[in-house]
Length: 234
Image (cartoon, rainbow, N blue to C red; front, top):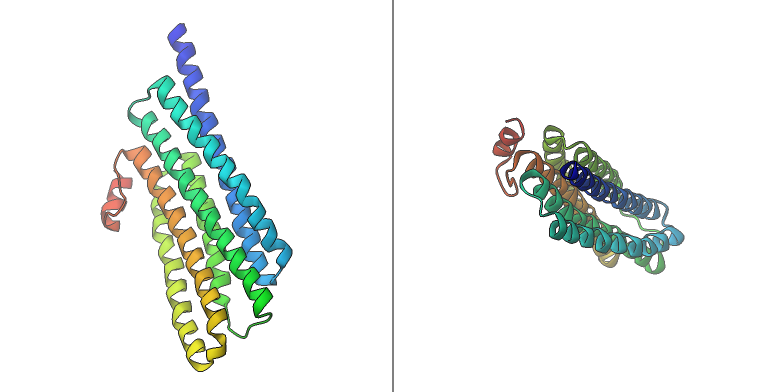
């Protein structure tokens, strides 16, 4: 009876950790969404909202990480349960860094507004890749909630689309700046924004890889994609 009680309490602790992770993920999703709206609308108020929300993200990271350490110390989980706790700890680090990138988008947007006003560079790729990054993060968190390794593989594969948008925008940006040197300062700000979005996609991909690690017990970071797919479908 006592063992059953301890097991039930342990499950509750794990579920609480997962719920906190998803809560933090929701905050970061909103932060990225607001950052992209700030960029699309060139809106200073939205930029400031993103920067302000970073405090909440940082606080959640510290809270969840402390809970992970405490759970490991008290419960001494093994096998899949330990992988889950370790993956949560790593996932929140990626979420916090994704939040940092959203803040970077907001700060660079604020700089463009203050220094350049309207700009003539077509930034369609930035807007598209921003929405793709939000979708990818949402999917990776959904995979984590369901512990769906097969769906996680798709997230890893889809991250390549954001990389392609980034490379396409960089090529276009170089042309713009070469044709009009006065656009170099704004162009560099846009480059940092595009890179920040690309990094958000990378963090979403990392979270998806942690799902495969939890479910399959294999570290698939830095492995060829064919091997990753085979591991997920075992």
